[in-house]
Image 1: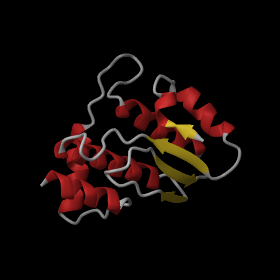
Image 2: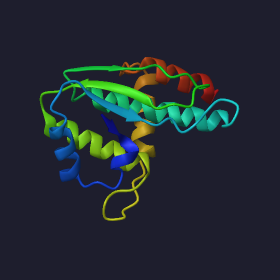
Image 3: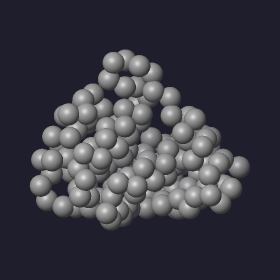
Length: 146
């Protein structure tokens, strides 16, 4: 089990060692949801779900098999992704990128703004060029952005 917030200060090598240390497949990865209905603005909920959908898309691109738990906006809980992967180096790269972009920074204190990637992902989905792997999260994003 990997909790993304517990590795936010880790180097890529540390993340790779954590992934390699998860000898049993599948690997469970938990992404905290940062918003909750009635306590967060619609804009913040929308952004939260867009980020989760995007991160799920990244994971789907390196996983042999990926499932996730649906978490509604009213729940204040982490989202569990269950990952079967063969290429642990690529999986570690994605988990490393997610962990550092989740908190908007990279190792050498370089600000990591993923807003361009999110806008590109949103555009590709809305124009039909891409079907999001985590459709529920993207649909929730659309519901709260309007």
